[in-house]
Length: 270
Image (cartoon, rainbow, N blue to C red; front, side):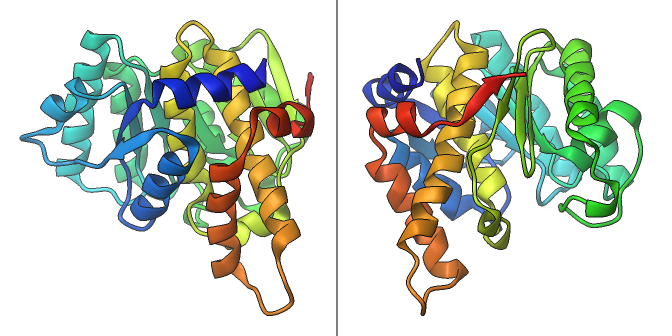
């Protein structure tokens, strides 16, 4: 199943409109290229609808917010909905400020989102409205149990109609009914800024290239990203650090084969 999703992404080579943050834009673009997709980044209010119309998917990443950017995201999201293009929401640091929280609520009220990808703190904020104070990172002291994390993801999926990808030490992918637990990944990925943003961009590519397989495509993206983190870590030599590791992740995505993904994916129905 996962091998075919990867193959289809490379055959289709979808163009993904990433309205992402300036911290991770370059890495998201390079990861998409490595996966076989193509990126375009545009966030000006006067062109986002036109750019979205030329693309196959839209990824809305809230990492570096501003009121004008959120207006542009809203406009792009509504344009994507009219065209039937999947929208992926990455509510980066949504619990860190009222600006982010209110913007995310407005987006979810006015844009039909196909996939929401966030960590436990972000998903908790979207479900319960609580606020966190560790920026974009998970507060380890408040990390929910696996069962509690999955319940939060399911609640958000039911409330929004989206597939929810909750990432952490263990990842969950659910549409509110079926759920997968993913054990791929490497702890050093936390030392690289933007691996979550890259995953959200990859989800956008995979779901657009595999219409009708939303849950499976999101699962494949999560497994692929985690597996690439594992492969990249195996390449590290003693002088290497997180900068080398970032590049090795992108290399691993470029060289990832369908057979590697099918055999290396660690997931289970949960």
